[in-house]
Image (cartoon, rainbow, N blue to C red; front, side, top):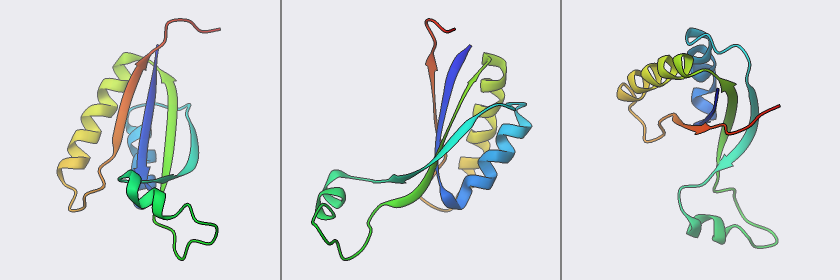
Length: 101
């Protein structure tokens, strides 16, 4: 079992949910997050009253799942990202689990 972590801009959230379904990853959790491309844009918004938000509305998902399902998911993400016309691909990482209860 490994931990799959996925980040995506909100525009592609429904696509990620479909990729989970196609990969037979049925159990996962998600959270709304703000994504930043570099530290300078974040630092410019740390004033008390920033004039506008510079972070991108994004989502993060994670799932404890099996290697085979992760392999299918990664394959589907690669295919999805190759067709993108934006600079906001789906990002995914896998973290090995040493112990669990």
